[in-house]
Amino acid sequence: MTDTSINIENLVHNFGGLRAINDISFNINKGELVGLIGPNGCGKSTTFNCISGLIKPTSGKIEIMGKRVNNLRPDEINKLGITRTFQHTRLWKEMTVIENILVPMKNQFSPNPFISLLRPNSKKEKERISEGYKILESLEISHISNNLAANLSGGQSKLVDIARALMGSPNILLLDEPVAGVANLLAEKIFKNLRNLVTNTGISILVIEHNMDFILRLGVDRIIVMDSGKILMEGTSEEVKNNQSVIEAYLGSSIN
Ligand SMILES: Nc1ncnc2c1ncn2[C@@H]1O[C@H](COP(=O)(O)OP(=O)(O)OP(=O)(O)O)[C@@H](O)[C@H]1O
Ligand SMILES: [Mg+2]
Image (tube, helix red, strand yellow):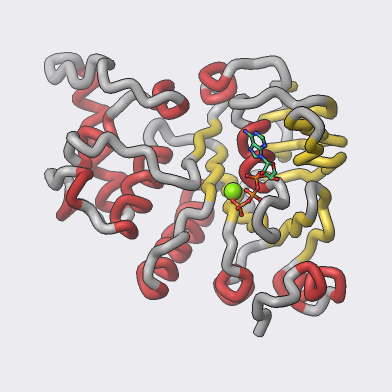
């Protein structure tokens, strides 16, 4: 067994003539909460799409839990214990929160309303339902379990999305801007929950966050800063805050 959850070496991804990812390398270790930040369009979501198998890297190597995944399908990569959320939440609006949570994980990559949902008589489904409620409880949203997804606030939708990604006890969680558009207080609570998850379960979390002040303040273990498809630097919040290239890349946005 390896202590490295994700290993990326010399990853490149081109969209036609546009090089969105330009030779990046980094590791995520077991039990780490790592922030991935960088200005709009620098390649953060594309990196997630390569890791989760939605798009195939142009070149380079991606290993999940020690296994090369470059040519695997999203569902095969998911089976290695990695789940993700999307920048724009993909909930089934006409279903309740608990129903959304119980949708089998393999469908997270291409929502399909025609999947068979619950088979309440099967033991496996009963266990899944109980797991779903436990996760909602751990994120302090069990009170909305029967609400229709269409009626949730932006912050609640984000939490439900995270809850869904936690089904099946993944080893690695990729969160694409889980607190974008969420009020500060709730955003802080979500981050505290992520920290607790890492501490209590040993899961690895890579979280994309656009708000620089926020990620510096909330204290992740490490921050990877991207700019124009490249990695500008990696380091602690303190190191990132004081790095001249980071300050320049973010000129125009505020770093306190
Ligand atoms: N499917 C696509 N086809 C063509 N170009 C794309 C595609 N997806 C992303 N891009 C381009 O690749 C670059 C990186 O985009 P990406 O979405 O990874 O950035 P990001 O860092 O996630 O930005 P944001 O903070 O706005 O979410 C951008 O120039 C974007 O326009
Ligand atoms: Mg993005």
